[in-house]
Picture: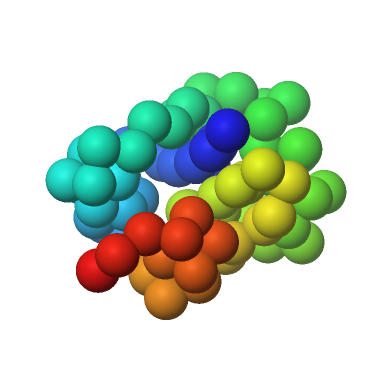
Length: 77
């Protein structure tokens, strides 16, 4: 399962979501600007206050780190 912690104004979040849609990869989007509990969960798990933060089956990726995401998901570029 993939969770993406986002905000509506985050350019990198939009790019990341578009990348997943292009690759037909499903994800759960969590808008931390509207969910304080999720925001705190994101901070606790990643140590980061900025978005995007991804949780890929328990592996945390901070930012749109395409190389790390491709590696973790074992997808072809």
